[in-house]
Length: 181
Image 1 (cartoon, rainbow, N blue to C red):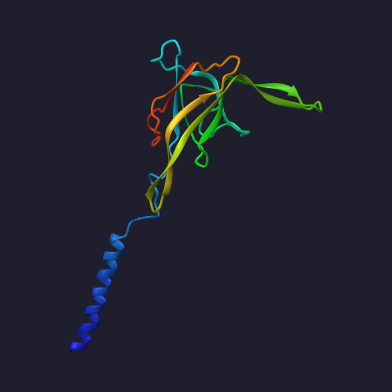
Image 2: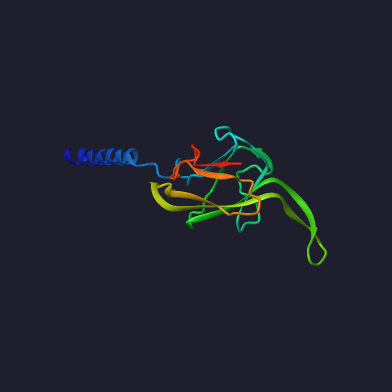
C-alpha cells in the first residue's frame, strides 16, 4: 500500500512545481515600451516667441536620403513634428523645407527631372547616445543626451533661431527643440 501512494505524491508534487514555474515566468515575448524615442520639434513665431506658428507646405528630408522622413506629413502646414535620430551616429542632419514645391528642370541629357523648390535650411542635431535596457523582450533602446542644434548659415535662412529645451531625449511626449521662424 505504501508503494502505490509514493508515485502519486511525486507526480502531484511535480505538477505543482511545474505550475508554479509557469506562473512565475516573466512574459518576455511581448514588448510594450521598447521604442527608441523620437525628437519632438515645435515651431514658434520669431516675433512672438510664445505663440506656435505653422510652417507652410513643410517638408523634411534626411541629409543623404532621397525620400522624406516617414511619419511626418509631407507638404502640409505643421507646427510640430517627431523625427528619428540615427542610433549609429552622434549626429543626424535634416533639410527643413518651407513652402516646398516641385520645380521642373532638365538634366544634362535634356531629360525632364523634378527638383526641390522652396526655402531650404540644413539643420544638424548632435548628441551622445545612451543605451538603456528595457526588458528581455525589448532589449536595449537608445536615448540621446547633450542634444545640441547646428543650423548651417545660408544667404537667407527661414529658420531664425533654435532653442534646445530638453537636452535629454528619453521620451516622445514632450518637446525637445523650439524652432523660431
